[in-house]
Length: 336
Ligand code: TYM
Image 1 (cartoon, rainbow, N blue to C red):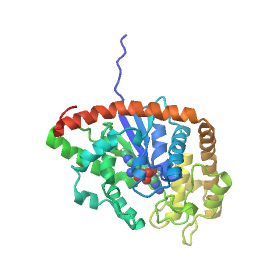
Image 2 (cartoon, rainbow, N blue to C red; image 1 turned 90 degrees about the horizontal axis):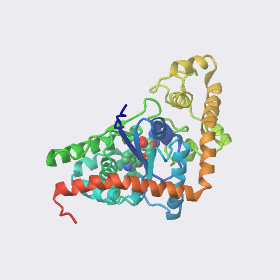
Image 3 (cartoon, helix red, strand yellow; image 1 turned 180 degrees about the horizontal axis):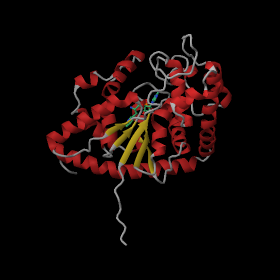
């Protein structure tokens, strides 16, 4: 019997190698990637070009980029089945980024909350790249014609802008880009700081942030010190508005154990925060241990990592070139 090859749907996403990966990155994005690696045709990259919108130490960036790749693999992304690459190795990102800059409006870019946040935090370096960043992100995505973009909640606005730019371009020049959808997890889309549950977890405050490579004792210490809520009942109950601290811990616990909120509430019924916090710490430490150990093992093999990102750039480049050629033709550039 002749086998019919079913075209897999395409997924694409990226993370900036601007710091060590943390459980926000993992639960908001990578976990979703890894769980769907068999089902989809997947492209995942290290967004190093985005990273320089904020000033970096070049040596640290050079070290973090392959380290991030090792972590992708350790999290379950098999380089044979997923195209893993470094953004700056595929020049079509910059090339399409420029074109899309010309189809993205000043007003749209001005409304981006990440731009507003980052320009507040980096008031001495509000550069053009920081402002036009979403046009480059649109290029990252649209080059690969993906169906889905698995990201955390904070990237939804950029994904929506990508859709608007794709639709605008398609309306002007005819069907060119697939209009992709963001793919946001139900649990873990917005992991909050352990020491301040009103703020999104980010590497900027290491005390409130749990890194994938952290040792179990440090993880446990951070969870034991996690800020819970000043309510009188002290019970483990999900209520994101009234109990943001405990609800954040419940989200994390649910994401790493697969338990529902109801199951967690039952498990800790009558036990209070004192029992719950170390239990979450232990569950997270157990969950991260194999990822950390596998990352360390992979990092020791520099030649292997190099072969993965070289091969990834070739595979990604072949797809990216096709889209760019189409776009150049549509806008009226003369073929070389
Ligand atoms: P970045 O590098 O800030 O974050 C990478 C991914 O992690 C998610 N994330 C979180 N999820 C839940 N809780 C948190 N506290 C948390 N912090 C971060 C982010 O939503 C993201 O999915 N612009 C992107 C990188 C990028 C990109 C792309 C993504 C560049 N080009 C193309 C998708 C497609 C960014 O700055 O993510």
